[in-house]
Amino acid sequence: MITYRRKIRLKDLEIFMLFKKGISLGYLIIEDLKRPLTIEDVNMEFIYMTKEDVGIYKNIIKVDILSDEKLSKEDASIFEEFACDLVDTKDFCTTIFNFKVDLNLFVELPLDEDIHAYRKILQLIQNMI
Image (cartoon, rainbow, N blue to C red; front, side):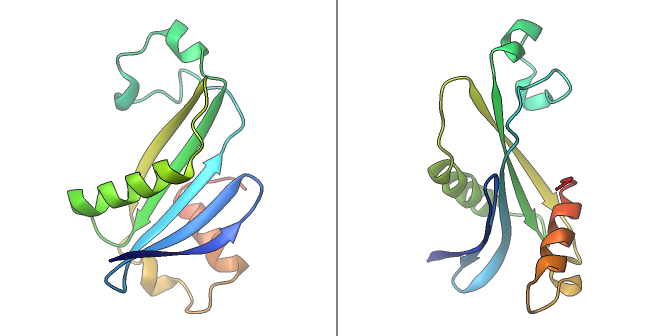
């Protein structure tokens, strides 16, 4: 059974923790960047796009999956499906998924999550909020 807890909800940022059979799989961070897609944002998953194609996307939703170990394909798809259900896809908007593994994720975070824990999570995914 998959469960989740919303850890933080801000205007352009949400953080969830997903659990499978009561064991934490990791964090799901959804961020509305509120900016157009640029050629610098394009990586291997958008390799088929031309510069003109990139220009049509007026907004980016960034989805980061942060875990303490490499996720199995099944667990990765759980995160992706959950995120897709939460993200409101609109015309001229694209979603970019990033997976990040930090072996010390749960060792270094405090048991009582507070603003410092969330800052640490955002630093791990290289967010500048």
